[in-house]
Image (cartoon, rainbow, N blue to C red; front, side):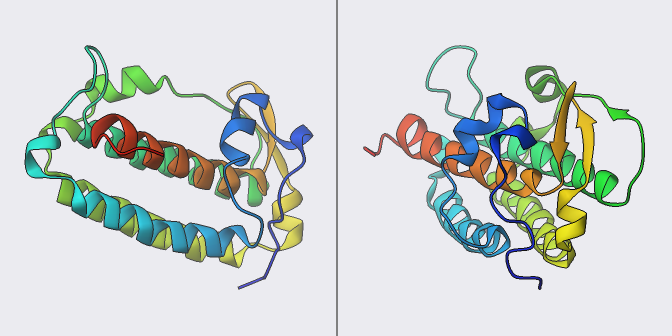
Length: 178
């Protein structure tokens, strides 16, 4: 693995919306963070009681299953963007409407353990992919959702997005205090 090949991105390297997620990611090697945080999130998901898998803390909010489905979809999309841009492919990549995707996803009908396993497999593959990127790969840019982004920024966005939703599962779904 190329240590620190994907150092913390500058704010000019991503849509400002993602600053709130990237700020949650600790300093250090983001690939190591992705691997380490995967284990912590897996442990949290394994602790969710079966009766809470379909719980919604408010009308119109996602269930825990749907949150994990969203994590899978978002990580898959962001990893695709990273690969696309790292390989120098051209063109602008479209965005996603997370609520529209959630409505047509089958995540709410799938057992949480199955969703967690899918996410683990995806994250494991992404750890290997991001670990293979060079500093030159990380500096490559592309346009996604109407904003320029570097390859380096995408794993930080993935890591922060996971940390954000992990905290929300703890507080909103399991009633734990921060």
